[in-house]
Amino acid sequence: MTATQMEYSAVSRGFYKKIIVQNKTVSVINGKNTEPIESKIDDAKWKQIVAEFEKIDLESIKTLKAPTEKRFYDGAAIANLKITKNQQTYETLGFDNGTPPKEIEKLVNLLVSFTKE
Image 1 (cartoon, rainbow, N blue to C red):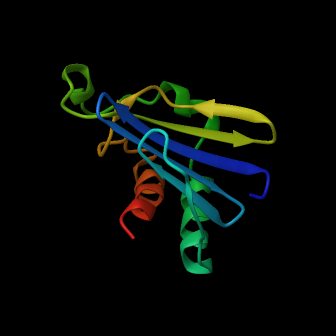
Image 2: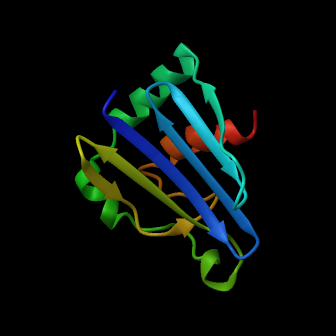
Image 3: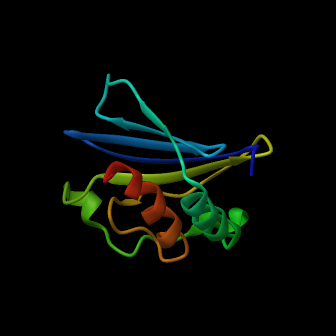
């Protein structure tokens, strides 16, 4: 997993959040033009992230269907998960922040949990 980077972003007119996870480190950006807050990920949480990551079929994430469509009328920020592994990038279509497709839900929730600590 050392050559893998996961990036979760959620954006709307008044909301901006980006979470980048790589090499047991997380960077959280809350708001445009703000400095990232970087911290180490403890071993237990890292193992959870790796376990959930390994369940994902990277080739299929670009076709995952969002379970809700609140982002179409400003009811939710547009969220996206981008994974870069071995210089290959895999990216989801937009989905509602807080309601990811079920195939990536556990991984997204682990990433988002860094903004709640």
